[in-house]
Image 1 (cartoon, rainbow, N blue to C red):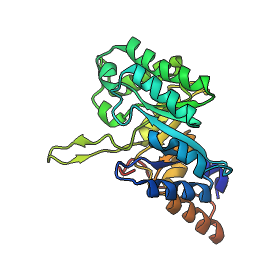
Image 2 (tube, helix red, strand yellow):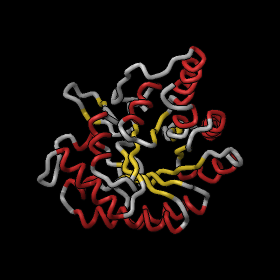
Image 3 (cartoon, rainbow, N blue to C red):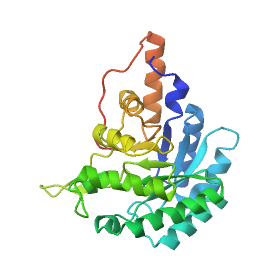
Image 4 (cartoon, one colour):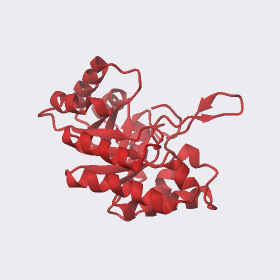
Length: 260
């Protein structure tokens, strides 16, 4: 195989964020994450303390979402939510930018918002991933094209101290012409653009639309170091199947098909 099991498994942030998930679902998800030895779980704020207990000794980190999923909380609310999560044992923080402020060109606000979370998290030894929600940015904003807007967000997040920039929440549904709601999530274009728009000290995370092993491999090929996923078992079971069959690479899969 092109990459080892561990190299790919340690890219996965196993997502436990669906609003209907019960405590039993969250516990089962943590056990699955430990079984497959992924990088982390990404869990709801109220469950961080329990997740730390469930994953004790497993080597799997606990990540927590902040201002999720729309990023509209006041900056102090995001900072305090980060403080609580870190005190409960979160190792990583996935925060959502204030998109309205960004689209309106209030870059000072955006930078201060991200910096407040980064400063609080770093004080506790935690790292921060900043979510853009790229499906909402297809038309650009603040006088910038879509790509230039994302480049600017990358620059702002790096200045503010972000450890990762992240494509999506997995819940950024956009109303379509027929009245239905859908989204793409991570795309190859955006991953490449975000990787090129940050220095090497800032990593890139894909989220949404990565549903199989080939998609996970594609994320790594494009420079992504983490990937939010719910299809962890299917991905890594496929790896073991291909490994046993003596296969040496990916099947040319694509990402950005929606679903999280």
